[in-house]
Image (cartoon, rainbow, N blue to C red; front, side, top):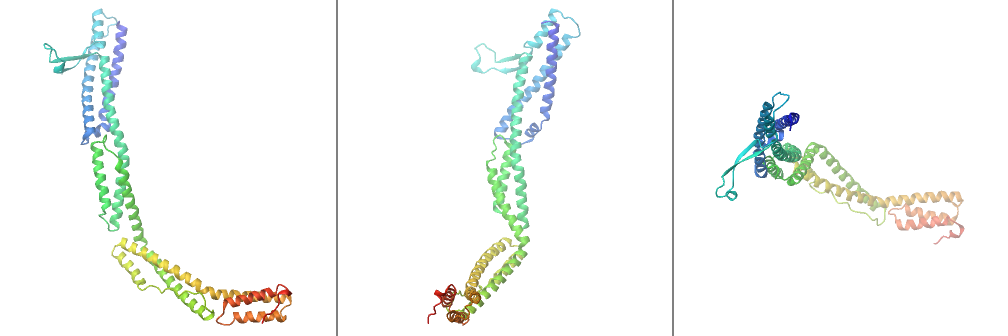
Length: 398
């Protein structure tokens, strides 16, 4: 090895030491490393970080030793353009020889001979030390990176969940349900998980996050519906009163239509509408009373039940009204058809035909005499229609 090669090796070692210095300083200020130092670690994370911190201690110790060797080599090299054999030999030993004493370590008893020493000195060359440092640095970075990754992944799920739980509790407070058991359980589970994540991210599991999120989500949806109910209850009560008025009106109309059908139609197929149940208004008033007392859940449940029953009753009343109006509507439809057939008889010049006129008179009497027998009237109307289709069909039966 000549002076030129010595200079190249020294330059490479100087550059390497500068890079190591920068990386070690960056490692000292890394956010993940700071969090590991400041967190109350436990379990697997505590054990891994303890090993990594020992590596960090060695790294700084080895860096100091490496820098010392570099300084000695630079001083020995000096600025002479040429070097004698002895300085070159010393420099070669410093740069590539076992010039660094790493540590004095105890030798395990099983590895000693009877006359062997209890301690030994480990020495290595700068290139060998650099390999040790690279391995130790990678181990430290791996622990910090894995913990940071785990923290990042868990925080990304826990922080939004914390906000969602806070929102659910805020909604619960606004409707007077401060202590909801499912939210209390979710809070306890979340607190426990956050402590586990803080102290042992390498072992913490986010499996329970989905369960907590499901509980909080369901409670939040229910509370939002409750808040909406509270805010819209006055409108919904007004709609309920309109529904009740429609029920009363429809029930009365169905009863009136039944009475008309019974008076004008013989044996009509009518329905006796069910009277509006007693206490309907009182039950609706209870909804308003509950809401005034802040019992939104009970008020909402009662209003839903009341509305369902009222709509069912309205449906029955509407069916009764339609059924009770049908007989008179059928009679009126038959009357209209009779007028249409008479107009046809006029166009055919059959108004004065005795047979046709007789059929018309009998159908008219059946349809305009109360109570009307719809079946008989329809038969007479059909015969009148048939009489208008041709001479062969105009016989009058007496």
